[in-house]
Amino acid sequence: MPNRVKSLLDGNKAWVRNTNRMIPDFFEQLAAEQTPTFLWIGCSDSRVPATEITGALPGSIFVQRNIANLVVHTDSNLLSVVYYAVKHLHVSHIIVCGHYGCGGVKAAMSNQSFGFLNNWLVHLKDVYRLHHDELEAIDDEETRCNRFVELNIQEQVNNLSMVSFIQEEWANGEFPYIHGWVYGLDSGIIKDLNLTVNDSKHLDGVYRYKKMMPVGG
Image (cartoon, rainbow, N blue to C red; front, top):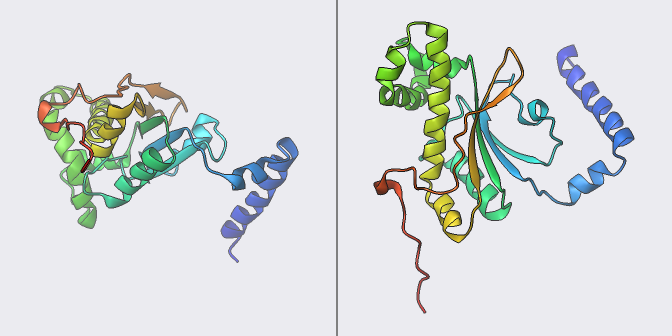
């Protein structure tokens, strides 16, 4: 077995030993049920693991990751994760977390072709188009990229708010809250962008659904 692969297995054993020493019944509790408070929609970037950067234990964060933390309404994988988290795990908070220096965002800013990936990056390019005037007014490329990252998170929070079954949950109570965060690779610090919402009032009217009426009766 290649040494690099074996190092992962050895690391797992060391982690289990350390966890058992600190929390003797941790794995017994973990195996019994899954009751996370949070759903994390983040970037696939290997440098932004949800539990590690928040200091959270396994079992506390349900995770969905993709390139540039996008919420695409035709992505059945993402919608299935969100539906399960909201309807069955009853998470209280959904966090959309991007990161500065995101490779997907940088790629979408350019005119370079990335083959099949272009089909995914077009969703990011749509965000750029929506905020074209603000972004083009920023001369420094790194600063523009960082602002693009923040605006992308804003739009993904909006996209989540448009999901019908999330609005259905809001019609029945205050949860889930949706938050927009950005992680700094060079500092390790998470920045709250103060985009928290738990209703659809910030959306254009065409995106708001009326409460579904019960069938029959």
